[in-house]
Length: 69
View: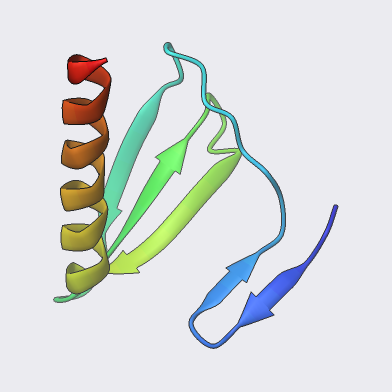
């Protein structure tokens, strides 16, 4: 397991999600949510509202690129 850090980013593992991975979220506070992946929440990401918006925009671009392929 490699550890990579820079201001604002900390990555401790590589995650590859299958198409049937359970997902859920917890909204905590006014400007933050945690996304959980896996049967036992094996992987989670905590993001603020701005980062969530960026993630949705990026995911929308990825879907459009896959549709175009």
